[in-house]
Structure formats: C-alpha cells, structure tokens
Picture 1 (tube, rainbow, N blue to C red):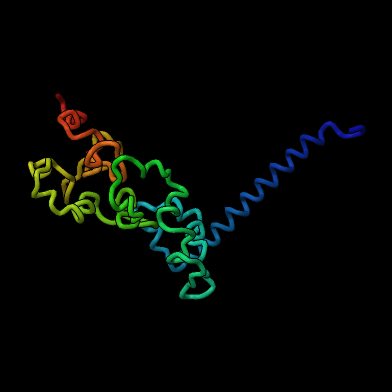
Picture 2 (cartoon, rainbow, N blue to C red):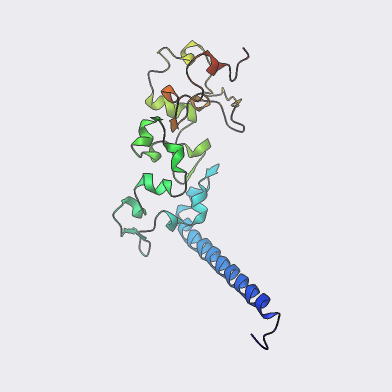
Amino acid sequence: MLGMSPWLPFRMRQCRVRMVLCALVFFASYQTQALGSCLACHREMTQKKVVHAAVFMGCEICHANLDTSSVRHRNTGPFAKGLLAETTLLCGKCHDKLLFEGSMVHAPVSAGLCMACHNPHASDNQGLLKMKPAMLCLDCHTDIRKGQHVISGGHPLGIGAQVLQDPKRQGKNFYCAGCHEPHRSEQPKLTRYGIDISACQHCHEK
C-alpha cells in the first residue's frame, strides 16, 4: 500500500505475538487461581511423592462437568465425579492409546479400569500406583508365589526392604514390570522379551 510504513508489518506481527503471550499468561493465571481454590480443601492431592501432571493443568481438565459453587459439589454431566468422559477415553486424551493396544492386553486395561491400579491425582509410589509395585501385582495374582514362576524359585522381586534398581529401566525399581508389560505386549503372558531363556539373558550373562 502507498504511504504504508515499512515497519508496519513488523509491528503487526509484534502485536499478534503480544496478544498471544497475554492470552497465555491470562490462561495460566486463571488455571493457577482455579487450582488454588480447589487445593484449599483438596491439598492432599499435591502432597505425595508423585503428582499427576494433569493436576497442575487445572481440575476442570478432567472434572469439566462439576459445579463447585456449593459444597457438596454438584455433578452436571453423565459421568461420575463430573468427569468429562468415561475413564478410558479420558485418560486417552493425554496418554497415547497405542500404549494400551496389542495382541496381549492386561485385563484391567481392556476393561478400562485404569484407576484399579493408578491413583489419578497423587501417590507415594512410582507410576502413581495405589500400592507398592510388587504388592499391587500380587494383590490380584495371588497364585504366583506358589506356582511355577521364577520368583517361587528365589528370583528377587523388590518386596519389603528388598529394593532393587531395574537394570533395564533407568530410575525405576525392579518388580514384576521388569519382565512383564503392565498394559500391553506383543509377547505371550505380557512379557517384555518373551518366555524362553533368551528373555533372562537380557539381564543375566549367557
């Protein structure tokens, strides 16, 4: 355009950037204030060793249909606790669904029972687990200790004071998930490396 300052396009872009930044700051401030009001009563949800990242994104990320104007809060949606969707679909909004699909899928996963094993807010256990890892598995798989399994033959499992570091999963304690996938697998019995002797050789020397 005739007479237009050569600096105008730059200033327009600069203005757009400022508008976006202001919007982000406003959104972050709103989320912080909303979370702060919830934590006035629900502070225990951030006082564990592991806190779900979604908690800091604001409660309405999951509890979109919850009217908090009164105590007790009122559910305005079709799902329990004012959740935005059923558990499986809700968790799948952030967590990659491919991590829960395969030729072998753990029964609680296929049934959409994420919270049978995980606390959705916070936990003192790795992976937001409800119990110490090995004890959580053995709570359902009660026959493992007595049956034909490597732990019945003396393989350590990290129970009680017997805390071991997983040689293949850095930063995690060793327990059942060192050999088994907790969600899905392409191997039999949800194993990570199969069920023959070569599976053991991933950790043990040949």
